Amino acid sequence: MSANADPTPTSPPLDAAPARPSSRPAGLDEPRILREALCLDDFEELARRRLPRPIFGYVAGAAERNSSLRDNASAFAEYGFVPRTLVDVSRRSQSITLFGTRYARPFGIAPMGINALSAYRGDIVLAAGAAEADMPSIMSGSSLIPLEDVARHAPGTWFQAYLPGDVTRIDPLIDRVAQAGYRTLVLTVDIPVMANRENNLRTGFSTPLRPSLRLAWDGVSHPRWLCGTFLRTLARHGMPHFENSFASRGAPILSARVMRDFTARDHLNWEHVARIRRRWQGHLVLKGILHPVDAARAREQGVDGVIVSNHGGRQLDGAVSPLRVLPAIVEAAGGLAVMMDGGVRRGTDVLKALALGARCVFVGRPFNYAMAVAGGAGVRHAVRLLGDEVDRGMAMLGVNTLDELDAGFLAPMGAGSRAT
Ligand code: GLV
Image 1 (cartoon, rainbow, N blue to C red):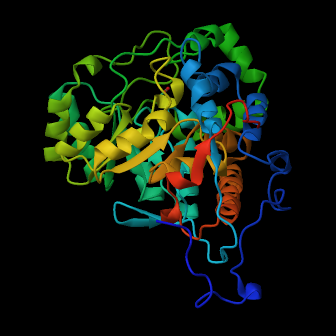
Image 2 (tube, rainbow, N blue to C red):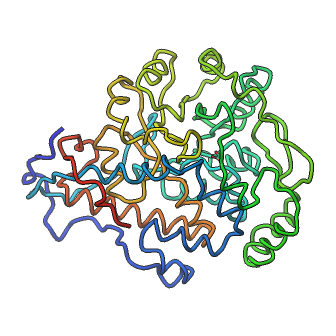
Image 3 (cartoon, rainbow, N blue to C red):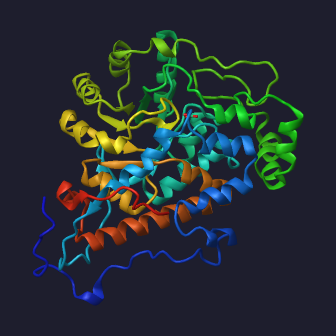
C-alpha cells in the first residue's frame, strides 16, 4: 500500500495531534543509571559492569567467529530509506495484529535462556514488562522459573520450547504448556546439537555452572548482583533449576556433577512438527527458519507463523542474517505470519524489517541488559526508547500505519553507514 493517503478531509487540526511519548532522559522516578541509556546499544556496557563475567559473556556472546552476530547488525545498514514527504502523519499508530491479538508495538521480547541470572525473577520481569507495554514476549524453555509462574504474571506470554525428537518427552511438555494457559507455542528448530561457544569456555560459563574459586570471585566482585539477584533468589526460592526443558524439573543451575539432558535433539524432524501440530491447539510458530523451502513446508503442515532467525548468531556461525532472506521467505510463506529477530537495535531497523514483509520483530539481548541494569524500570525505558524511535521514523517516512510500509520505501545503501 502507498503512503500517499489524502490527509485533508479527516485529519485533526495540528494542535490536536495525539500526545506521544518522547525520548527524554529517564525521569526522576527512574534509577539514575538509566539516564546513561539513550539507545538500546547503551545498555550493553551498563550491563557488563553489573553482571559477573560468565553471565554477561553468556548473554553477549555468540558462536565461533561471531560472523552471524556481526552480520545480523550490519545487514540493516545495506538498506537506506526513500521517504515520502508532505503527508499528514499526525495519526501515527505503531500497533500491529498478530494471531488475532492487537499489540501496541511492532517489536517483542525474544526468548532468552536463564534470564533469572541476569535479574531477580528475570523471566517474570520481562514478561510483565512486555504485558504492561502491550507487546509480545516469548519465554524461553531454557529457564529457571516455572512456566506456570510466568503465565500467572503475564498470561499473554508465548512459550518457546527446545524439544528432543522423542515423543515421550514432547507430549508431556506440550500438555503442560497448554495446561498453564499458553496460547502460542514457539518451537526452536535450529539447535540439533549444541553450538561451539568458545566464549563460554573462556569465561567459565556452563549449564550447570560448576562451583570454583573463580566463579565465587566473579560473584563476590559483583555485590549488587550477588545480593540483589543470586542470594535473593536462593533465599526466597531456593536453588534455581531448569524448570521448563521437559514436563518435570531438570538440573540445578549450580552443581559440580549434574549434567543437563540434551539427548535426541538431533532426532527432531518434520514428523514431530506434524505430531505437535495435531496435539497443540494454540498458535504454533517455528523459530530458526532461514530457508524459503522450510517456510513453505511449515505452511503446508499447518504452522501459523515462522520467526526468521539465526538464533542471534549463537548457533551455526556463518548462518545468513535473517534480514537478507526475509523477502524470499515472505514470498514463500504465502500468508503465514513471518516475524524475524537478529540485530534489531534501532527503530529504523524495525521499520526496515517491516518494509521487507516482517509482521513483527523480536529483540533479545538489549532487553536482558536493560533488566540487568534496572529491572522492570530498565525494561520500560528500553521499550520507550525503541518505541519513540519507531514513531519518529514513521513520521519521517511519511506513514501513519505500519501496513503502509513496503519495499518501495527502501533502496540499497553503502554498507558501513551503521553507527551506534
Ligand atoms: C539459548 O537459547 C541460548 O542461545 O543460549
